[in-house]
Image 1 (cartoon, rainbow, N blue to C red):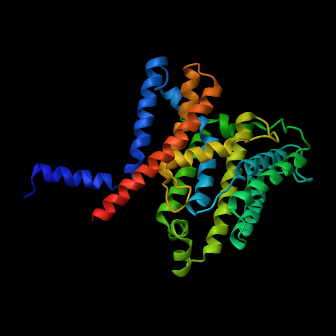
Image 2: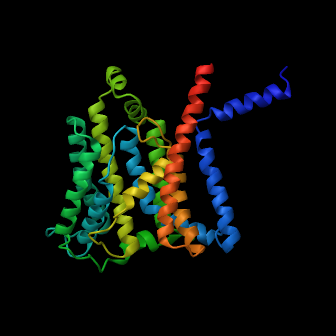
Image 3: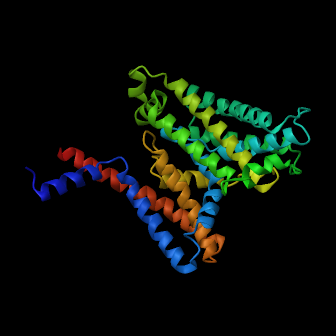
Length: 336
């Protein structure tokens, strides 16, 4: 029979080697930050403010999910913020003035907008999967080009006078909770199921872990890599539509800076920038941390400039923690 000490060692060993243990640092950070803000304002840990925080992270939370696909696959996608702006603009035009003469209802407008954005995602995917050009350079270029297309499509002006149904995607509530939060949760659950429970998701991780090994094992690495950019673009479009619904108009500069927040959310959430590693739960917690920083520092009347400082510092600390955790895991593996 095992002693209490042996039992305790075994439990700690299991916890330390659990795939969720890496998120312990982020969870501690969330708890400590919540305690500090709550002690200062007294309104942080309330249901009303929780709804505000979740509503705050809807757009860049979904963008973080979009970015997770290429990141885990071992590539990169900087174009998500421009694609989200394109999706929101196209959708807004389709339900108001019309896009190149086409005017539809909201549902069809969303479907058409997603299709248009997926075409641009396919362009990214084709270039990345069929050439040796660095994905960072490819998507940096397409980010600029797509932003120019957004300005051309909307003719350098904001698209306003959106119908009530469109705005209700953000302002509408069901059971006291914003509709956009339900959409956010649905996206995270769907992405978690795809990446964690399907053969397709396992292939994405395998390619990100070792492109050559995945190719030798018979995985169609080009097709999988191509598809991650299409999915990324589709999710970015959904984020853009929700951003437009929240603001009440589609502007050509919408989404600017959101790619950086999405990257921060993924990095803080444990998604490896080298590919092959990351959990959707971590992405959600990373996005939640980003939203809590903005909300909490606003409650403490701290300026937006300092919020940038905190976000950047957290990203560096998160990557440092991930590297430290990987070193510890590697040492434990070698001891075995």
